[in-house]
Length: 212
Image 1 (tube, rainbow, N blue to C red):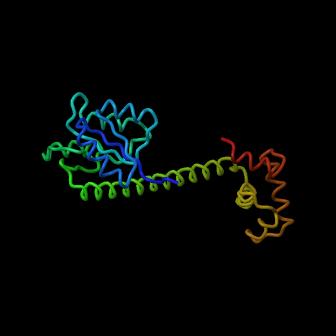
Image 2: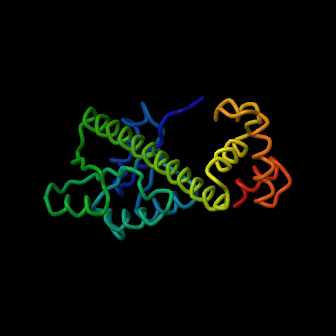
Image 3: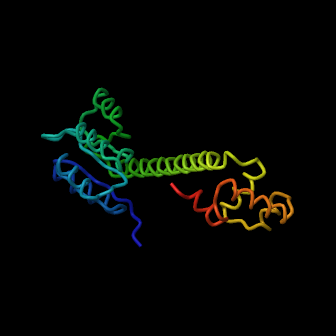
């Protein structure tokens, strides 16, 4: 199974594209674009690179405008972008960083430097994706707990504890063991919970908690 990272290289200089493809292609899958417009067409067609190498000085749509439009594509709003430039001015670099570029590489580039920068940005991009996934899990868990508390607002604390475990798929014996209660008491509480929530049993309770 091929698990190589995909990199999009955008430059109007065909020689730069060829060199980049030769250098990067040893370790990564490469897609080439000869202009900002071509890059956007490629991305909108379903190409989802893990990193983009983007030339700053291109005729028509320059790298800055291309990056603005790339960031407007939802799935690519956080994709690492490295600018390729012959301009070493600080103003140009600052503008790129404000737009969300992660790095600059001056042309003509050195192979070892290019590969090292790509590896660094791919690793940082992976860490960013993991952090976003973790935040989303926390957000979902928080939303789920808030929803549970809202749905069970009419229950006592003990009834709510039992309802939560029923919703998680626990049977009466498991619930009794976890909450240090007798199975008979759990059974009685379950009946009260179903009556208060106006449902018929544990299956309907689970469906209620999962329903959007």
